[in-house]
Image (cartoon, rainbow, N blue to C red; front, side, top):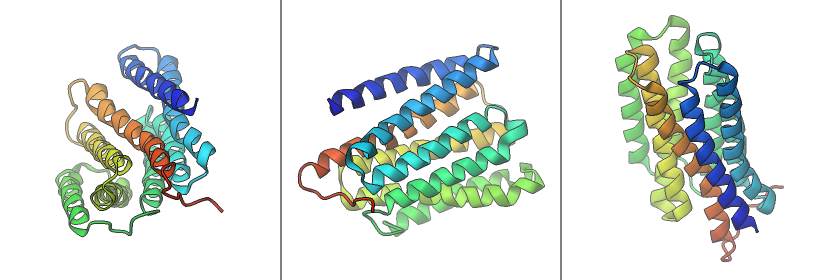
Length: 231
């Protein structure tokens, strides 16, 4: 029954994400808000259902991260007015994911992965630095550090644990970073052709993979790998 619910939620989330991307090309703002909200809720529902079933800390913190993502998704529908609140919401997403990814792996899980991600994100930040508004330079620097740390920890955790759940989370973190990089180039360098498609496909893929990793973690736990329980 739980497996069927998970499959249904994931299928609906995939369909909703495609409709959300299409809605960016339909000049009806209300439609875009509705589908953005619905897609985020469905993806969050995957992690929430797994947390509710097993009460483990990993699924809990992934759910919290997806809740902050939902707020960020809504804020960034009007980036000229709410870019900073959106940035703050996604920063809290990365903090939550980092907490999840350090439940069963130290930080940094793999030092050279962390150094690599920091170098890549740092190079992008330096390249775009002159285009950032003065008031956003520090917030974007802090955000970039958290983004790189989240993706690096997911990768390092995957290299350490070598489980399907950890690999999905690592790929999800990478897709999240790719999406944010494209968003930064689109907003602060040059407009990308079909930017909603280029930005949102890796974003939703990343979020779906991270949310789905909670299900596979539970599958491993059912084979006598004890999850860490919430107090």
